[in-house]
Image (tube, rainbow, N blue to C red):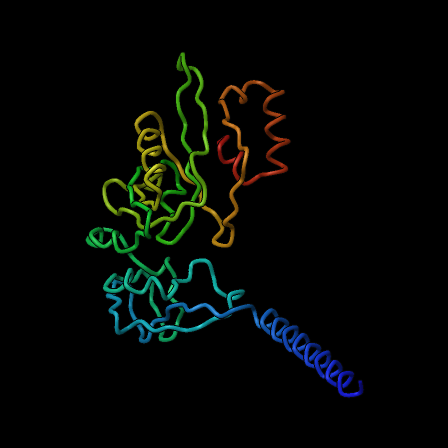
Length: 250
């Protein structure tokens, strides 16, 4: 009996030690920022317009909690090799999607940034936000369509959290708009093509840390501009969710 009791005690003690070790391991991981993620860094100083060669790219493992959404993951290494950089980079600096140029003579390299199952499509977007968007930014795409009769227009949120792959610099880009290369699913690219044919497209810039998708956004008619009750209703909704409805109203 004593041997059995001793065996049970040892088993219980071993289980306790294992649970304590498991707790400490999990606590340490959470305290240090979670599991480590491999991101890309530049190994030498580069000036704007310089070509980012494969030998200039290194990897660094960073706790997940400290990885910026614009940081380029190690799995995307081959997508950015031999592209140009948009800003001066210092050695050992983490590479961001906003550091990569995909405009002008580099248009042929856009395909290297397209992720699996996605497509790159270009659309002319109205408004100053389009001229401010840079590769790696995230935008929401809005469309305005004429209503039957032609007196009023309807504002629609077509899609949210869309990755900007590039921005055309040339005659098509003005301070009031520009041509943007967007990363979309094939279905969304089809929807955008129809919307651009029927109305005007605009974009609104998102915070790089905001990847939320807002559900249930209603279409907005320009008739609310002359109907006080509807305008007040939309204003009340905008105070609860100000980031998109106000943009659609403008």
